[in-house]
Image (cartoon, rainbow, N blue to C red; front, top):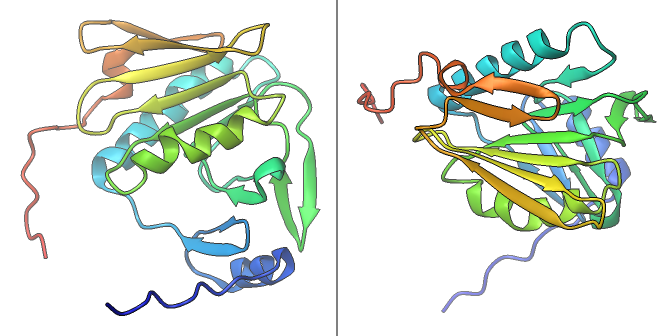
Length: 197
């Protein structure tokens, strides 16, 4: 059996230097740099639909809907990550790191599940988001079927899950009531991938 090659660990400063030069998204996981793979079409459509629906709901208030280009600091886990969506309704707390704005106080985090990230999104990443006092909701959106899971933090710091299934017409995210059909608009689950390599 051949041993796995050792993981090269980098400092936060080295990570930000790599990130500024990179053409792809790089996350920092406690000394490891992780390249984020490009997303499938259903993932991108769901993200666009969610941004449009949430922005429309929140446009007249103080809340900001931030896309997957917003870097978020998970300080207690020594991570910097790019969630699919983040919502902040208080004044955003931003830390300037090597010329990049890093959000410290997201209130709602949305992750769109894919085969390569689902386990991490459900376990380690969720555990890290729980450590941010400002996070009130964690939303997992399936990309292969109509299903949305909303975890809400209670006043006693417990997390309650509400599953939204295909028969549910609406999904409650923060102060917004979204139509399930709007979240999955133009997403064809039965579409065959053509020209797959």
